[in-house]
Image 1 (cartoon, rainbow, N blue to C red):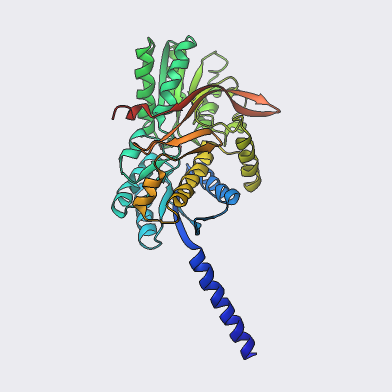
Image 2 (image 1 turned 180 degrees about the horizontal axis):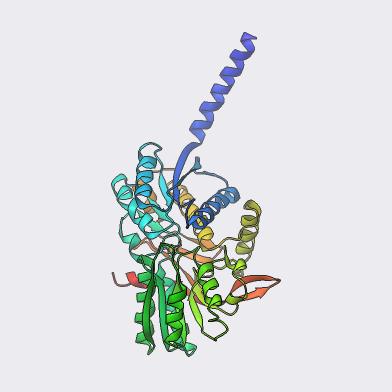
Length: 388
Ligand code: VNL
């Protein structure tokens, strides 16, 4: 008996040592709102990250990637504390997630001081990547989505617009990057309305906008909020009254779109990802994402989590398994690959994602609602950083 245990013990010890040296763990700290009003974003991003590892394997250059998921509930002070704990106690090699702009900004000083890459996979205010030289992004910068859309509006006879945005960073970006290029091309923003972040009631804003009788109402709200907008738009009878609503894809995000109903039919939006994107890679992404998540459809947050994980894995591969934070962020610069959204590139100068913008129309196909891409503006750089 003794002998057998002795042998077994030695064998286990031997195995343990061998696997530890062959595959050292590289932990990635993932901080997301998994509870509260933005939980849909947290759920999407982490599902995307996990799917990437499931499809590609979790060992890269001899490092086994392990995700440590933390819920910040959407509270910036909590995000910062969790980032500190993950860096100091868990020795994470990178931080990922960041569901909202204030949350991404809250962690930026931790990334800078600890020299640990912070990969933003949801938040979209342009200035975020300028908050730390250790920040890169796989979601979007709002101006990337909005500025090209104004060209489409002008080309399609829209001349007067009321903008409605959520009253914080990405909303200000959307408002500004609609107004400036639109007016430069002869359009006019006749009113710019801002709706509170917490418990928003869109009805009075939609009514005010409609009363101004613009050619269209342009709207930005963060992911997870669009269903309320569309419900209140329909309740006021504004769709039946012929009021034209256009916006960023955040309003008709794929996670919620199918339950929004016919009010969305024909809506034109601009964004970098639709689950209906026509590529083999995307069809496989959507199918595998659904299989792993009880039929959930990926939205632009899901694909950003997937690509955020891709970026971290590609950087570890490029350094040959060296997880020094400064080497990792360097190794992220200039990376390019095919994403389920289309081609993407990490701009080496700004660490910002460069990607296609698509103009889409919401349509019913086979009984389901989809955002069908019908025009592509290729490889858009964040115009807010041009010439900086
Ligand atoms: C932000 C921007 C958040 C766009 C979003 O969804 C979004 C942000 C939560 O920067 O806070 O769709």
